[in-house]
Image (cartoon, rainbow, N blue to C red):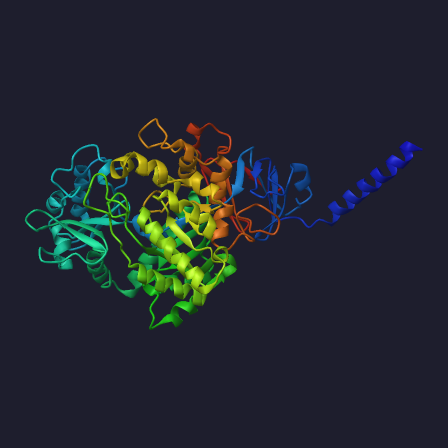
Length: 583
């Protein structure tokens, strides 16, 4: 009797399972035989993923997902590899990345003398009068003295000799300084009598002669001369160059498993150009573009408001934020705005690049027109002033701050009293783990032990306040490598050393992956569409060669991207990818 009663429901269940399997619509793509970390609390891990169209249909065991495999289903055997939600680059410079890939790559070049040699070689093949551009030098990371130094920076003597007839402009790794040769300074009209503009500095030697180094707002004097030269291109040449840079940026992102790229500021004209590429169906990457602060003009609000769009082009273009509004400079150029002077420059507290009254005006625009606001703040005073401004706007307009998701980009150096304000106010700490690893060697000389311990890259302290912490690379300031940034978040190793930088601020691996997935989606108002591998969400997936959630820390950096999948389409396949089949 007992057995009979037991077998009847089991038989009914078996019949129901067969019927359900028969009714299941085959998926377009199935990933199977892997370790799937979903970042979905309801179903944290599986072996396989079914994808139909551009959405995830199901995640589960190999057996459970097998019923989605039909005659036309494309199947990828993951070979045991890790599949995660695609990386969300929450702070980068999209067209800056593309442009940097056409220039001299100076990151990691060991000395100023070596850079001068690169410039000399470029000058040999450059057309007369053509600009030579490069990016990525950092005076703190060279292995020998650059020669003459003024205010902590090299002078342009060597590049004057290397390229006397071509204008040369070489950007600092931070983006907050550049060095130009004499020819470029001449074209920009910069001389001994040129005053430093508000929010910037033209560094001059003891005789009053410009050394070629321009800090923060002073860079605009040189950039305008470069823009004037570029304006001489034909419309066809300009369009071709732009599209090439976009293509290079997209490919570089996809090769690194990035599926969403949050771009920290573009002009309306650039957004129009990108929108055209989206309309043509040639933008596989998802872009969340912030409009440059210069586009917020009281006399022409309409044009900016007209460019606001959400999930345009089937989720490939969103424009709903203004930023990154520059409250200050950077630590490397000693232009981060500090409450107290730098330990290694006792008369200097950095620069307030954009007046706080102007930042408040932009914030008021954001409230009025539904734009998220994003402010670049690295120094502790810049962070405090920005939090004060946000708080004032929130109180005046009686808004719930967590619904706005306003951001502070970098949030690198904080006064301890300001750390709890992020969580309390609902302000996103949009940080870049990689900066800690690369900058740590000079943080102590700049700030001293106590300030660094209490407020430098305090990821775990911010996390404990309930603040949303996101991640990125600030590319092209750093290479666009989420793997490297993830490694920094969980190790806090100082590049070139065997020690960790205040290890109590490390993130767990789960936290670090959250900063690059669900938290990135949240700050872009896309948590219902992306950030985790769950049914109904965009099928944006990165497949990695190593399990970054368990592999020894020393092995994380060797991880490669095997597949990048966006909207159910394989948009990048790495050289080490597993075989794929039709069923």
